[in-house]
Length: 152
Image (tube, rainbow, N blue to C red; front, side, top):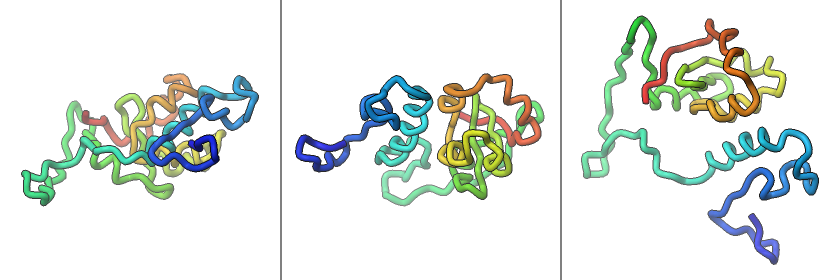
């Protein structure tokens, strides 16, 4: 975001219609809701916030390492946020959608909207972005890509 003199206002972020969207002054043109979701996600990743999914440091500044256990319930693998977050690259791209974790690495290049819209969600819960553009029924096509259930 820029001030009246075109200087960057550090720490202030905007996306979608408030910034004119990617359509400039034509704020109602195209996919404004989808653009808000996608660009909002990109901006959100750049905002420094406390990650609530980290281990407690015991008060002394040293992180406590937790053993990774592969758990399953009713035959489905349980995936912790920490594990999901570690699969956050284009060549290792896991995304949680409606509490199910999918390995979308191979599919990303086939995605009609382009691989970038999936890669930006790698290692995160992409439910909101998914819902903005898809119906939940399409997930049936990805059963073979399902890793497990996201543990909250």
